[in-house]
Length: 463
Image (tube, rainbow, N blue to C red; front, side, top):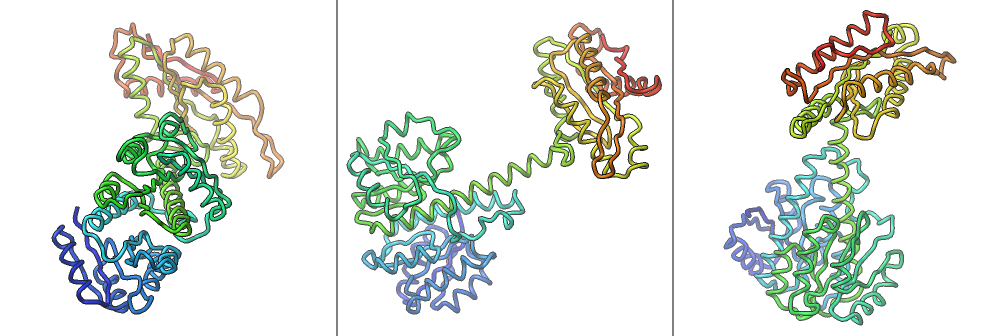
């Protein structure tokens, strides 16, 4: 895994040491000795990660971090600040500034490289979501330091219940709006979290046995309900090998022994924000995919979804030796509605007809809007007689009452014509040709239109 890393430190020796360690791991390293050089390098080099001394130029490392997190062009670049482990106030300020992590000085190489790998993986995953999303700026989660609105659920999992209870007592006053839940390892593995898993797990590195907390973390990452939860590993022994392994296995953050409770609370809040940003991006991607196969006016599926679905129904019918039916439905005299009352009235008719059709179909049936006033219905496991009854029912429910146009105080009578084609398991023809079925249904639809409309016709080719 390559990447470009900007190292900002006013001490030349520190810069050189970090460059040697990172270059040996095949990272492209850019150096800066002041905040001005760092800002220039950000524009010029476009780094994947920034590692800076929190006390760069006094406290300008914090200034750099705040500026990056406030700038849409750099706010998603991970920032790792370096600070002494006993400089509590500086560490708290760094987290408040939006730092993704704080590493202790002097930096231990194994942990540094593991954390860099960890942050690069997280950044690549987020970039992929953003690439698919394309509209993330409108989410309301764009600012990483924005206030957390809804209470979060935080699971506390320690080897000894007393330790988890201690964490809870420590955090209750610092995270008063969040739900703190004490769980054992077995509770965590045995609980079906469903759609509302904890947003953050704080897990001891060793629970019942040495390092089994890391195994628990791997298990949580493998489960659908918890794979996107943030996981903070508490490394009570300060074992560097455990720390590196935790990051390589996917830990979101790591707590060293003796971490100040205020720092713990801020790290948890950072993970909550990051989790919610990821959730929002994933939801937006899902919504985008759904929109790509959905007609925005009627809420029905569109042609892009319907035709592949029809192919899947065909394949299933062939395997199971079952019938299935296809309907093409057209709204009668739709053009005259548009011409007389306007396109808003036409839209109202489309929405009403779509609703009536959808409400009178089985759950396993599919209806899609595939043209202006044309709909496709796919009916799995449906015989010729069943298809005829369904078509008759749909004609009746659409024509049962006019469409009320509230804006102009008019009522418009509405009806549909339907063409039906059935692929029979006992057909002598080729039941697998989608084009043939659609052509037969279209021909039958034309027959319904030519016979006066408001009726259905079953293709004579259907067995």
